[in-house]
Image 1 (tube, rainbow, N blue to C red):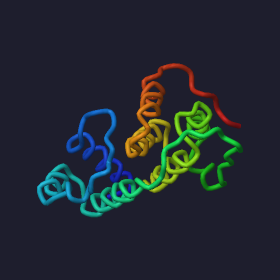
Image 2: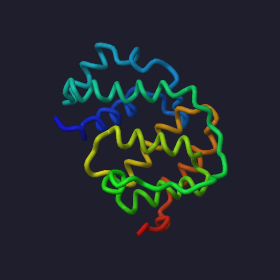
Image 3: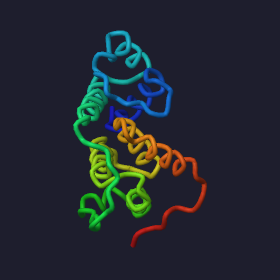
Length: 167
């Protein structure tokens, strides 16, 4: 099974085992929720042991971020993507990420977490829809982020023009 399966395990878990309200607040110990019954359900759904383990590891790391304070600060610099990030995130992805930063949807620290958790999925074909999903998951982990979640929801539901492509 490929690393892409990790995202499918995560989506399956969030669709079937997490509260349905907008703010998930993954503050509880996710591993306690992945009991033998859930593990068997994931295996029946076609997920391999390694993919399930990677998904649980991803969630554990996300749930351990509760020490970071959520505060929107005014950007005082510019974010330059590394050559590796430029290779992985195409122009549209980078433009969307920076658009979230410029529109105060996310502060710098959360922006970096979104980049980190997207890269941690180790997916070769990252697109804006995946970044939106990861952004939602990361933001949902911060108790004071309800306004940001609403802004992100508007961006996700928006059929308007993209924030512009980077050269």
